[in-house]
Image (cartoon, rainbow, N blue to C red; front, side):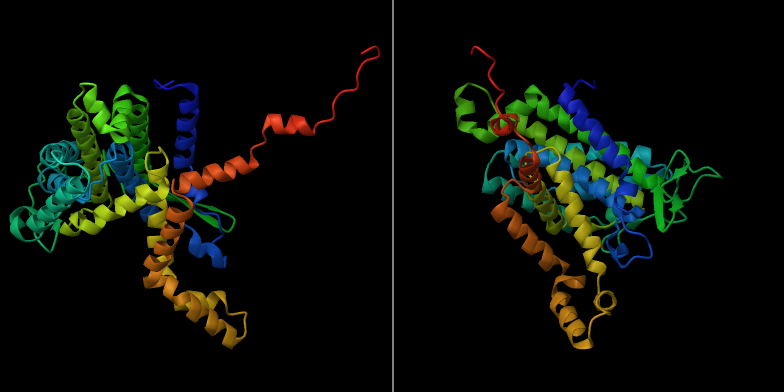
Length: 398
């Protein structure tokens, strides 16, 4: 099914189910509960899970399969965002033309950067990609201001052409009339579930992106990329030139990043140079390593993990902490609030950094390795079970 073997087909169907059921799965606590702070089933955060999952999936094709560490993928993220907003300004708010063009332009930009950067490998490749990303950021911020609008950021104005903008067309990003920001809320007891059009569009795109990456992983092309990562020198001795394969992986990865940047502009019709900063490139590296580089689901888990901390733990301030510990004596309450204060709110980076160090030290394979270890603990081995079963009594005469 879908060109996959039965095991991968089951895996894909599980991913599809979990993705489509995300609005339910990320809303485990009732609204009246103090733990509702940890719910993540609201549209903005769910869309970021899907978008940065796409970004990390594409980066994993380059880094996880070939071992080439790029610090410049934020450049493609920014190019995708600028392209989609320009399509808003020129054509209209339908996001589909912008997304298609974002992938094309990001792919061409990745072809140019990859053709130059892949002349080197290792740390030299990483430095080259970082240099290109910083050049792109500075160009967008202060040089190409007629195209990028510089520090203010590119946005849509009332005097823009928008030649395909009909009289009754929505005045915000949409897909053939379905407005991205529109939602349907379903109250069930004390729970409130939100089903957002923008999230489900991003989710469908993410499922397609995951399916393509799965096909790449299982293809002869993916095997070549793994061979490059394992021992590129030995591959050269066989007479095969690895450069076309690494360049193709770089371009595919750039297309994924441009698609993610375009979807960010579908959430909010604004594009700024900050999306091209080196910190955005470093973030996708953390996502991939934290989840498990070279695995299929690892980058998605890493993206969700980091975005969850960024959006949930950053909102926990002293007032929330005091509400949690209000049942305690004042002295103990203030002590616990003071103890937790550096790790939440503006200090969420500290908590994430500590967790990242723990994962790297104890789970070198990322969160996926942690899940595999837990699965092994609960997996019952038939051979070990048979040793504890009583032997059947011998028949008479044996």
